Image (cartoon, rainbow, N blue to C red; front, top):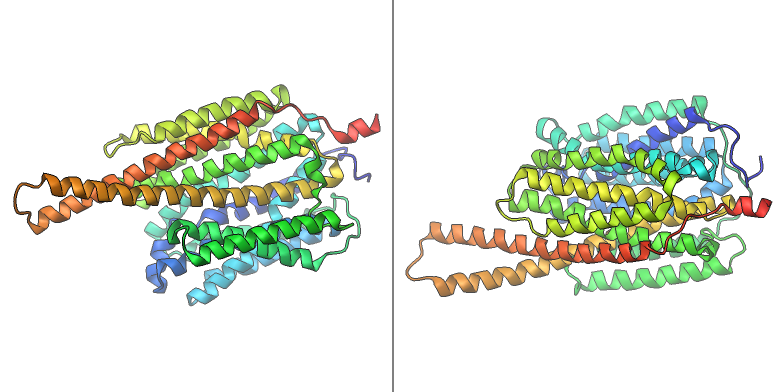
Length: 494
């Protein structure tokens, strides 16, 4: 098979098997978020410690995703996916039977090793299975998995933790992973082109230091503050590591991540827009639950249910968006989606202590509609501008950029929220003290303190959503420069 061509007939059964694997991989990414407080009590560890179940998973994935381009280029599709799913299943079993936190964290790390390559394999198979003019609809189906699986994770997690033991979170995933593994052994084929390339181990070291340092630094900055020495040190080391990694890739004959992808103006523009959008989107997904649970005091499962309509709408919209992309191209979808996202994000900055459930759900759901119009069309258009030999490198770069940008956006918005919350609490406390006319009882003091804390946090969330709106507007401005990509393979053939 010529690596520059698409397959004559899409392998639908194979794609379905890969979809199952990618779904449990993406679902597993956010499944523990709501469950962490319960697990913290059960395992008798601090919140800073239990947070490593999420942070550690993200770090391992972020470090390994850049290497996925090498793995997909070097190894055949079938054995690579079987190996990845086997590792993922072993990690899931390890987590399910974990007697203590150390074993549980080890299981999560093993899961991340297997998970990091599943999404890139599926995306590359999709790219080679469909011609450029039909990729929008196909990638829309991929978006359904990519977006809906993490979105339903918190709702599902909240329900399970409320009614069952947290181990069920892993016991539920394990049989799905085993079924996917058995199906892949039975029916998976080798469809992606391979060639012998050497692995530059020093690049992997630089990638681990660079992306690991940035992801860790920004993911902990929200809690520890930007002035924390460890936060500053890890971010600086991470930036140096990424710069050194990029320089080395440019010089290597067989780079781990081929920087030639950024010679395509459309891919570079799409990557920048995706990064900016990821910053606003991931931050918004943290801020909304913070408002619902911490300001309004709504239980995790109920808060998850409030987010569910947005997840369902995104799942429904993703295939529709793909078909619209094939028909109209990326610009009109991106501009429309980012206008909707910007306006709805701004309205989230107007949330009040007594905002109705309908208002919260409606605005959040409309925001998800806007995001669904942007994510996959932008990514697909960027990949369409690359020759097929660079597809593995394009998907690896996209996934890495989105993960790093999402981490940075979350850290920035949480830092803004914390800073504003602190200053607002001080202002409200001074106003309350100045307005006091007589002695205050302990009960009145406790009530007043709770009200100040609630209002200060709401003020912090308001400012963070305004910053998220401004970030989204930057992506909106950039989206006006988009145009439909033409396949370099067809241009070369002509």
